[in-house]
Image (cartoon, rainbow, N blue to C red; front, top):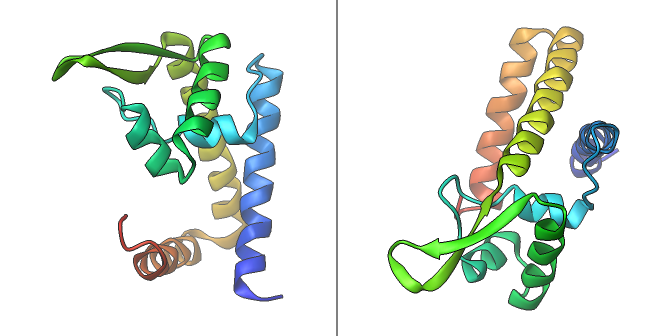
Length: 139
């Protein structure tokens, strides 16, 4: 298998564990919604910036935000820097969901570390960070 496929297999395994845990905890969120929500800054993000970060159109981002809002996971609030603009930010329920997802991620990474050992896990992380530098120069 090529490297990209191997990385994708591990990514999908993690993603599925997180999605299942979220469903079990009562959070009904699609993959697209969760990927958008992951890009919301702590103090909120404007819709246009959120669309850019997620690599989707403003219209798509707007639809995803509306769905997240219906689930009670995000809220729109006035931008303190521009009263005409609105920020999208995680609601209390959204922060709880994000915390639950992070707990699952930490647990899976712990399983991977137990399997690979701490040294190989750290080398893998370093390699992936370096690879990210050339594949995503804006990060």
